[in-house]
Image (cartoon, rainbow, N blue to C red):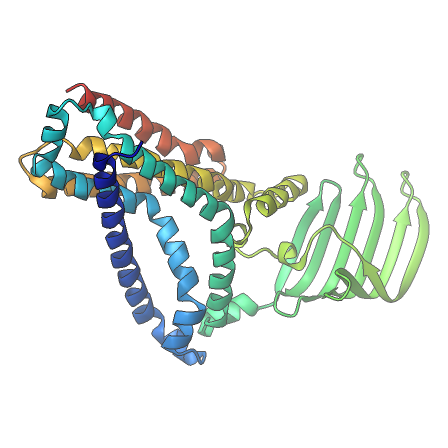
Length: 366
């Protein structure tokens, strides 16, 4: 049953959070427009265009990235105000336990964490696709040249298959100087295809090889067949986006797609799988962090201090930056293979979770 006390705290919680969100969005959008206005203008996009085509998706990204920190600071602020006005003392003196007082915080925390969870796994990847598509359109100068430049590809596409392209263009989805090799489990070459060019056919979702020459071998290395021709349609177990993945490819996939992509990358023996695993694990850990930081903020700000709201905010902001720094630093270690991805992503939550439990029970029994 939701009581008057519950409604009062929930209203304060959500009201403060909404104000923080509006303030954050306004600051982020204004700063981003100022820093990117020239790039937008050079590519023919007006401010109205960017507000319609880019910033709605940018806002989804920004809000979700800073959701846990915003919740943390919001709880610190309005709970410190309740503490300074001795409202918490009055509530607990009337016979309401600190555990009961915490219930509306738990309800709102679960609601926001659940919303964040759905957003992280499904809505945010879609918003990232839209955001990144616009970012590509507004690249200028050397950044644009580097993005659209032809690149060399040397990739293991399965434990026994290798693919090489001398020069591949991600925009046209075409490459020249193509070679494909397939081996058996004993590392004996079974098939080799060379072609002067390769390009992707959207019509039937296959690769087309131009000017090809194909050889097949027996298990003992003896040539079995020789073929050549003008064109050959070939189905490979990867798309053009996977052939030359973007640096941000993982953030544009919803979780089912990301799981399939990680499985393929593991099968290929890719060295950067931890980067994708970091993205996968942080989608859940970031949502759990909302709940942890809600109760950490409650524990820190529900005790009256001499410095009042200012001191509580200082402690809160310092804790928030410590959390962000540790989270980012550990992900760097994980991406370099120094530690497992799940450990790096969940360690800050584990440490902050223990600290939160200690402070919460200390405050409850004070």
